[in-house]
Image 1 (cartoon, rainbow, N blue to C red):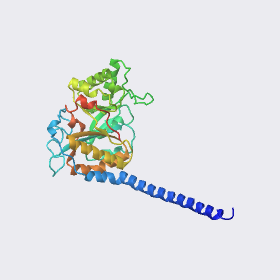
Image 2: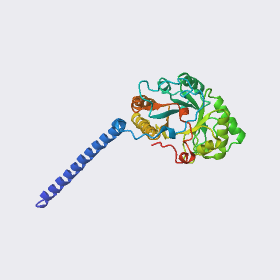
Image 3: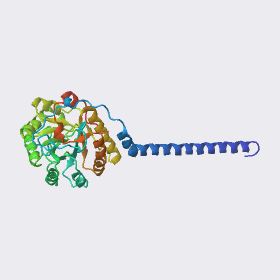
Image 4: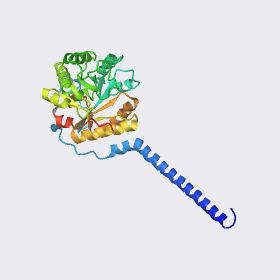
Length: 326
């Protein structure tokens, strides 16, 4: 190309190059901003949340407290009369932290067992380390639950050995619940492992809860489905029960689990008490350990889940939805 057209093409080429460079610079700046925001969410946000003012606390008398005599952490159980946080005022709220899925050779098991806080341990029966870990938890003074395998909505998911499914005959359901309880000696309660299909079936839950009550245990609804009938059935039987308020470790990072624990703490302060469920994972163990000083600072007492049994879990609340994962 010659003549007057050459400078014009050169200018156009330079303009395009400048535009491409500008877009590249803009993309780099936006990427850096995104990285900073993401880094803040994972690391700084939990600390920021911890510094926010706690919401007003409602009266604890609104929460019924019906428990079984002699359980650890109960007024008449071991440690009765001791202050939960020595040198501090009485707790403003109570939080139960339930750790599910014990029974496997988890690397985080020893970390949890070394914690000086009354966790609640839910042990899946019939697994290689079920009885060993249940005994270790009891020795540490932790409350132990039977983490009862129950049928989920997804037929491709295996809930575990001797699971409670909706197609079982009544006698077989009773037999399997009895077997599960016998397989975790010293358990004081039961909660459901999976069970999004089984806990929505009234016939099944009447049989399960009838057996649990006959054995002198309580039931904790993990709330894996919005259609759970656990609250309605348990309240109709007059048996002690509790429900999960939120899951802690839908993502396996310490920052995420810590933020979820602080959310559970705020919920406890808002309503007097809360139940949160996590799993035997390294990130969950690290997050629990790191957040304990903050719970003490806020005046939140970590208690066994048996300390939170009562009439406040009315059916209308229980049916409100599954426990949030996110």
